[in-house]
Image 1 (cartoon, rainbow, N blue to C red):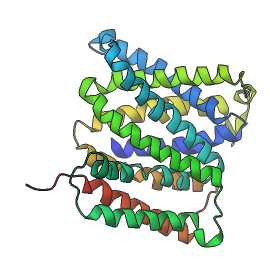
Image 2 (tube, helix red, strand yellow):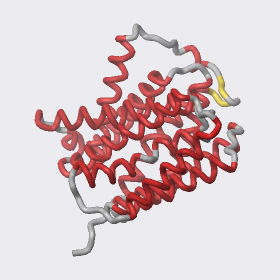
Image 3 (spheres, helix red, strand yellow):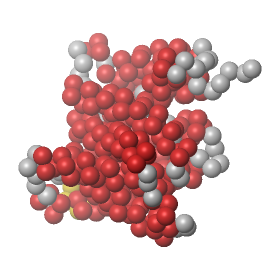
Image 4 (cartoon, rainbow, N blue to C red):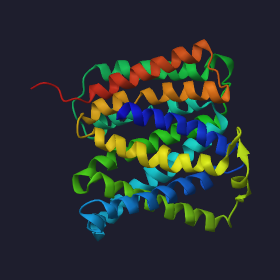
Length: 294
């Protein structure tokens, strides 16, 4: 299930980039994704037991649902879309996937939980890997806005993980995800109203990479959002969260492969080595959060 979701998310990176290339802007694509996923999950929530009752919320839950939806389902994907519009898909994901490392640092310093010493090894490897990915010895060839967007997505993804851990203690995963997408859709509509509808919808009638943009948007909503989220949630019933997170790190590898095949985005040897170091470092940091024996 985790590998399947990773593959769907990986293809979603290329599908999203093709939509952006067609002329749809990042806030527009974020709105399409959130609104489509919200409607789809509403239907699914109503169809499955206990039906609409699972969607009931209380006033005390609103701050968490709003923060969770804004951080993880609105700002993270929008910054990710900004990043992939300016960077190769695989590199953008590598920046975003430093989030588990930030979660481990939060556990150590924010929550003062004990962590294994390999956290620091993971930190060093990840920083060295990112330096290789960015090729800092060449005066930063990567687009600066893209890099900042990727790192911003990582920071907000950390916030999403922390709030999500609290949210699943109060609600089932399906209703939590449904309302999170609902908050994201509402934020997208408000942003569009505030910017006087910047960015038209004409590109939806066009093709990108030989594929109709509407079909690509359909993939982003159904196979790039709803299905992989449900797969990850289902996997949590069989694997601990740490294992799911580590296995999920196949996504940047698969995404880079898909982008290489379909978009011609080739990473040089230094970036491939750097990407490997980042993933190893994040894996070490993720396992470092496991409580120490005794």
